[in-house]
Amino acid sequence: MKVAQRTGPKTAGIALHSASSYDLLVWLITLGRSHIFRERMLRPARLKPGESVLDVGCGTGSLAIAAKQQIGPTGSVYGLDASPEMVARAKKKAQKTGAEVVFKQAFAQSLPFPESQFDVVLSTMMLHHLPAQARQELAGEILRVLEPGGRVLVIDFGEPARKRPFLDFLHHRRGHVELKNIIALLTDAGLKIIESGDVGMLGLQFVIAKAQGKDDQVWQTTVSNHDA
Image (tube, rainbow, N blue to C red; front, side):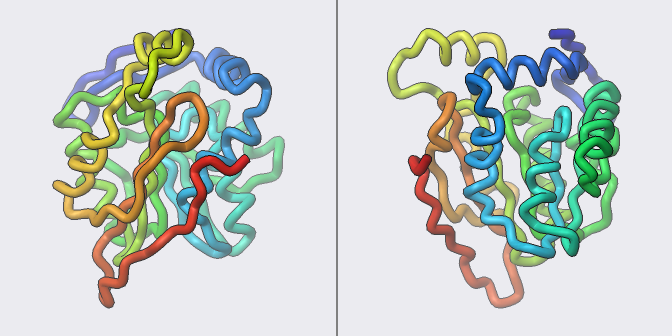
């Protein structure tokens, strides 16, 4: 897989550019069950019809397209990625499936949207690509673009509880972020942690956090982390 290091005033970290290799890798590591994989990834977000969703670091767009299917025709989904190759493939996928998803090339640390635009922000398997300062900038941007009471779902590889050779290989190649560090990152940005746990596949862990709303009611989820 082609990987490039991008640095500059608006971005820092690793951008993946081989879109076809990325899709092949996902297919391989999910043993051909990528549709189940995407369902599990989205489950903690509990998307609702008509919501507005932003997928930061959308890759080839599969998760954003799955999100659009869940929120229906009255909802809106945007997908952002730093790689033009990923964005181009995502657009082709959306066109092929007829999904109305807007894909843009943009940097995670400088989201091209006004304040309070989205009900939900997704950040899946991309946080480990960013250095510490860039992660902080991303967390601040997520809070900025969330509606009051909006929620963010962050998923990334965690440290495995027991050594598993394949997961160790993934962590070595792609890196990982400890769950406590994701929680601290979002808390420091001003978001309230609602739930965290295991996705149930590939050593992935999730955190759901919420932007402060006018009534400051805690958004709760009844997700079961280990359901099939």
